[in-house]
Length: 419
Ligand SMILES: [Zn+2]
Ligand SMILES: [Zn+2]
Image 1 (cartoon, rainbow, N blue to C red):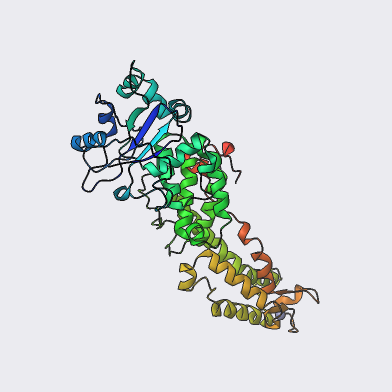
Image 2: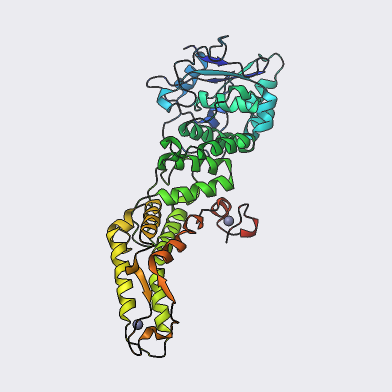
C-alpha cells in the first residue's frame, strides 16, 4: 500500500510511518513489547497512562506494517484533494509517511526523546553507525493524518495548518498529545483554535453539545484552564437531563466517563454544579416572592393577617411562571437546559414589566401586615425578576481544571481564580 508522504522536514532524519487500516488487521499493538523487537521499523513506547487496548498483540500485523513501509517521493497534498484534513476512525485511516526531524521530536516530546536518546532498541538502532536516513519508525496505533498536523505545528509549517479543524480532528490531536506528552508544544494553536471555535456560536460543529464536549476534552488534555472553565460553563448551560438530586451523579454527556482521555471525575463535577445551578435558578425565580413576604414578616403582628394585595401579586406572579413553564415544580423545568430556562425567564420578565397585576403595594386594610410600608413603596415582581436575571449569565459555575486534576487541594494555586 503506497502511503501519502508529507515532507514536513525534507531533510529530516526520521520517517514516521503510519500503516493506516487494513481490513481485518489488528492495528493495535502492544507498543512496549513491540519496542523491544530489534527491527528496523519499530513502534513508539507507550507512556505509562496509555489506555488499555482490547486487541491482542499480533506479531503478524506488526511484521506486515514493516513490509508495507513505502517511501514515495510524492509531495504533500498529491493524494489529499479527495479527503478532508485530519483524522479517521481506526478502521478508515490512510497510510501516511512523515519525514520529520528527530531533534524537533525530541524537543517537543519526552516520549520521543526517551525513545531516540535512551537505551531502548529503536534508539540504539537509530544511533548505530550506518543506520539508514531517514530512519523508519512505524507507529501502527496512531492516526497519520492527525500526526501530520501535529508535525506541521512542531516544524513551524504554519501555512499547512487549517484555520479551524473539525472537533473530531481536535480530539485525534488530543489523543496524540496525551500519548506523546507534548501538550505545551501545541498549546498556542490549541488556544487559537478554541478562540476561533468560540466565535462560531451558530455552527453546530462547535456550538452544539457534542462539539462543546469535544472542545472541553481538547482543553482538558492540552491543560488550558481558562478555556476549560468557559467550556464547562457552556456545557452546564446546554445540558438537558433530569437529575433527581445532588447525589444523583449519573450525568450523561456525549463524552462517556470511561473515555480514554479522561482521568478525572468530570461528570461528577458537572453534575454537582448542575444541581447547584438548578437550586440557584429556583431561588432566583422565587426571590421576588420573598421580597414581598419579607416586607410583611417584619411587622409586629405575629402571625399577621395576610395582606390581600400581597396575595394577589404573588398569585399572579406564580401563574405567570406556571404559564411559561418556569414553575420550578413542573417537570419541564427539570429537563430544560439552563439556557432555555434563563432565556425564557428574561423574555417573560420583560413582557410583564408593565403589568399592574404583578405590582404589590400597601393596601387599605386596617392593621394589615403591609402597614409597615411607606406610601408609594412597592415591589413589581416581574421587574424584580428581570433585575435578578441580569446577573444569571455571570454566575459562571465552571469546573476548575486545576481543582479537577488535584482534587481541589490547593485552591490558591488555581490558574483561574474562583471561590
Ligand atoms: Zn395589606
Ligand atoms: Zn480551582
